[in-house]
Length: 609
Image 1 (spheres, one colour):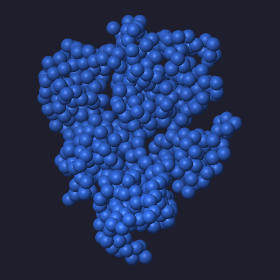
Image 2 (cartoon, helix red, strand yellow; image 1 turned 180 degrees about the horizontal axis):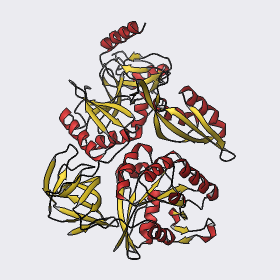
Image 3 (tube, helix red, strand yellow; image 1 turned 135 degrees about the horizontal axis):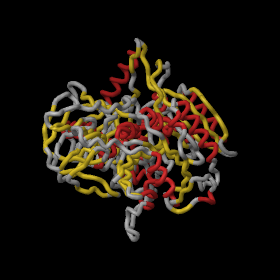
Image 4 (cartoon, one colour; image 1 turned 120 degrees about the vertical axis):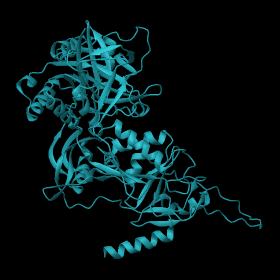
């Protein structure tokens, strides 16, 4: 059977995963009466909750006696490492572009990686049924982008399909009236245009896992493409490790893919995408070869992380109340497991401390790791994110990102002011519709930390922002944007009372409700002034045995501010931490003791003066 290996790449929310749904339906992978979810490839709980793809995943369909292996990839720049490492597994890419939005920052990033790997793109203009669709202009944008990225002549002559993935319709004409049910034209284009992989089955085996999975029965599973040779179930092979060592192991299970299912195989040959189980600590980028014929492939190259934050063991008085996985060894094991799965993540333990510096591709990348660990029962604390600085030719440099913002025209002035204060440099501005405007900026990554909350406030929730890494440039003299207000910090431990909160309402806005467990040093609210304030939120009303002629008034409190985990990370300053447990996300000061904290703050002021 002939094989085609293809990746579906696009900017976030342009319809990759929905397109995979339609391809699965059009190839009759499911039974006619089978009930299937939408975005069926987004199987992870966080993916389904947030409506985004986080992990690259693969499926396979059979169409006209051709096996088509399809890899669905994430659209966010933070998960770009997932896109980079699967480029070695495919022979072509399907570039999905929104018929209205056109090319966006992540379109540039994923397309650049595909062109570097020598792949020829098939362009799919999705959401063609939108009233505001502009397919001709979008194709021109794609062509301009390909020329900017240095595409060769063969890559510039790309076929175009027009689809409405959500309606499962496709045609080769931009005219909406020509849309017909099914993805036949796109599948035919994939078969005709994507080259068949090399089928060198006679040479010694070379297999490099680009993705990892885990199964309770067989342990870790390496997923990748067989570069050459054949592999058999039960065969003893050598694994060429990244450190240069060689480890022999027996293949316990060999899997292929069909639809959403894994199927056990006895043998597979060059060009096929398979999953191999048998080595408990197999890692991305290692090479599996026959025993005595070790010939490692070059390791998978992934762009360096640009953001870092500190993870530490939970040192609050409430440590161990919610989670069972609280010790340094448990947290370190979990972080190291994540590094083996996620090649774009780096972890380094700080000497003499139960803390680790975790480096990733962005706030979303790190916050998804935090959320996964929280759900698994871990307790830990994290610091404010910081951009990773580099020294290039003796000059301190920082990462820069391209930001594309779509916002209502009446709010775009406030957005420009926000970006200007954070050292953003405007590259382009245009009105996309009568009511919407688009601005493109280049801005230091430092300037984007904590930006999202302010951005959503000034655009009243209607703004859309996307960004991707450009390069490192000399560091700008910029004071990192800090909160314009201080916080209310608890000076006692106990349960918060309505009486105490009612008396403190004129001091600021609360983050807590009556009856919550509070400890000293925990942040319980924000003030309207540029200074922190120690408050007692556990004070109860004194009772006397004297009868009062006035009935006690019912205390009516304002609704507290409830922040998500990402908002907490944006909110805190360098002297604060976010405590993460399975049931709670709390804000706290690094130094919990009120007296010690005041001494430290006074000492810091003296040093700064």
